[in-house]
Structures are given as structure tokens and as C-alpha cells.
Amino acid sequence: MNLRLPEDVQEALKQRAEEEGRSMHAIVVQAVERYLVEEADRTTVRKLGAKYAAKHADLLRRLGE
Image (cartoon, rainbow, N blue to C red):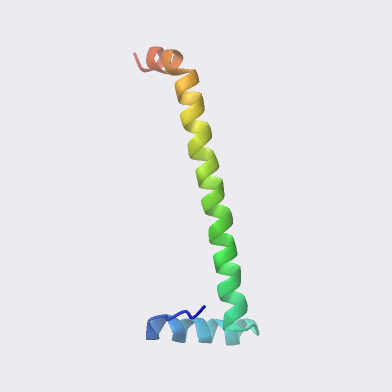
């Protein structure tokens, strides 16, 4: 896989990698992994929210009155 970044983003990534003593690749991999975990968590929360909203719709309606 090739990843093309805007020049300014690539330069910022390069500087950050140098500051941290890490490779640009390692930083990008970590960022992608973090994104995937966070999105999986968001999906789980959305599903649970919808499930409990449906299950407790009457209570939620009464609380809103």
C-alpha cells in the first residue's frame, strides 16, 4: 500500500517522528490502529444506545414529558 500525504502533513509527520525518535511508518501505523479501535468503540456504543432506547422507549418518553 502506498500512502500519499499532502506535503505539509508529510513534513509535520517527519518532524514529529524525528522529535520522538520513531519512524514515520510507526507513527502512521499507531494512528491507524487507534482510529480502528475508536471507531469500533463508537459503533458498539451506537448499537447499545439504539438497543436500550428501543427497549426503554416508554420510559424515555415519560421522562421527556
